[in-house]
Image 1 (cartoon, rainbow, N blue to C red):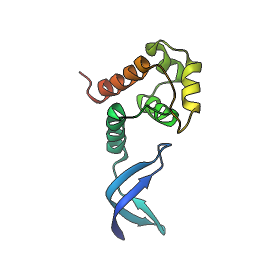
Image 2 (spheres, rainbow, N blue to C red):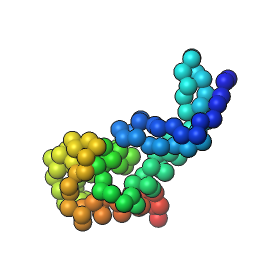
Image 3 (cartoon, rainbow, N blue to C red):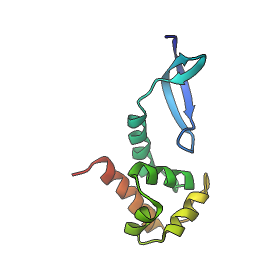
Image 4 (tube, rainbow, N blue to C red):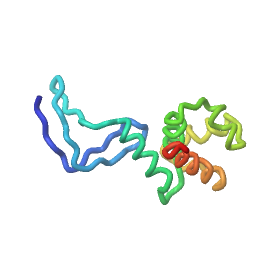
Length: 118
């Protein structure tokens, strides 16, 4: 199997760009594909989102909800918002959601609980 290492690779598989450094690519059926553990990458992306400096955008909220395995309603309920609010946030795609900071803080704390269950 043919392999090469690239200094930078942008993965778009989560609905937003994730910059990866020093990634091994393998050639599969003529297509260069990253040789990475996507479960580990998902955990790393969640960790980065929990502490990013800027506000969460709609695609990131959708990614978080899917990582948690939650429906719109199940994600919304502990945040004290409607599932329609979550739908509005997710429709913002790559733009900030403009949710209340206290709600975003709760989402970021939920990420940390998800990553480090007791």
